[in-house]
Length: 521
Image 1: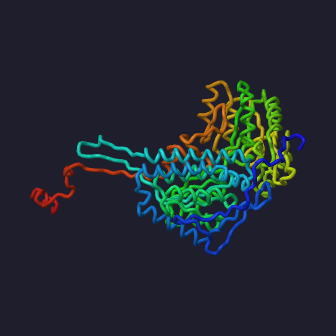
Image 2 (image 1 turned 60 degrees about the horizontal axis):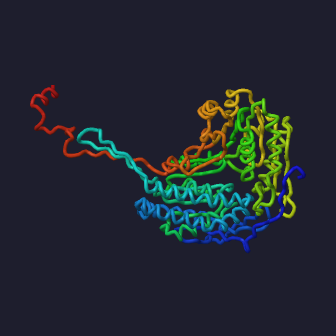
Image 3 (image 1 turned 90 degrees about the vertical axis):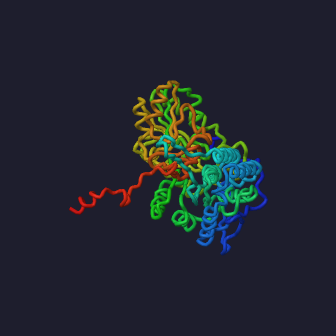
């Protein structure tokens, strides 16, 4: 602990009572039919944060039926883009008005720092506004070069009922990468948040009703993967599933959705490299590496959990990373100065520690941290910011997603070697390169296997730019025009102008008399 900047005090008030999260089905907030609930204890404070309705088969089927009716009768799918956009903008306004209330609950449910929860919840409003702009500007194509009597039109129509399954690490942000885009396209939805972080999603149900979203267009069912998640990924009345979470669960969803040939969009894991060359702005690179490693307690699919440093600068660069890591405010998530908070569960903390112990056993060196830690006055569900060097490509910590505040350091000698190391993973979500040489940056960006590549920065994102991965990091894209298009079906409309089509079957009057005799012979 003496090597870390530990924050124990609390500067943000706790809620007066646990939040009561309810389902939102067919426009109505409701409890489960059998009255069951699930409790969420704060990983950072050990107090009861929320009591959420626990959904079962009945609630899930009711929600799917409501979404199906709402799509089929056109109350939303046939609404004008202007009218859909107006409601999405109202939702964005309500999100901004409720940021503090949402951020406090998200901090207590997830363990992330309050400052990051505020940024996530408040920033999500921009995603809703951008989706609203797409609702108004969506268009197809026309083809008027098919001949003087033909006109072709390509229509884009909403895919139908969409199931949305979101994780615990960015519960409101990831929901907002999916839901407003699906709604902008004219789809209706059934949403299942993680049972560990249900509250901000349940709060959104209140906002959707207040904004005037027609009943049944968005339905929220709280509960576990079984039965809620399993049913919304297999039900025949669901046309598409979009899921963010682990690669293992993504594979199961792909298999189960295949029985009804649903469209599946997946945003899964990552083992994201940053490559640092000697000619880089090293001060900026060090800060970006520290940010990319510890942001959201390292529980982030875009975490830069491994760096590939040119061997000429490796010793100096690692020393700088360690020194800056010691200045990162670590501890009580309800302190506005905190930058690294609590691990989401005790089991997950143990998993992180196992990766570290395994790497040390294989010959890696811990330069900082390397173990669980208790924070005075808060609790024991924390893990020290950790830097490990001497990592080789065959080690699990270099290849698998640790999902914690742990940085693995590898080295390279050439650009080719750096690219080879970067691509030597089953994942392909994001990657970064630090160099003042534009040729180096472009060569890396073109050859690295990643859905997003950052040059001389890390984790900048914009609603206009699509997000998603290659290889086992997923399929499909979120946000941006490409993310919006995921929720649309393409239909070709072919129109003939006038009675210009020559008959395929010729009438007897049009057949020469000799033709029949020739056929008989």
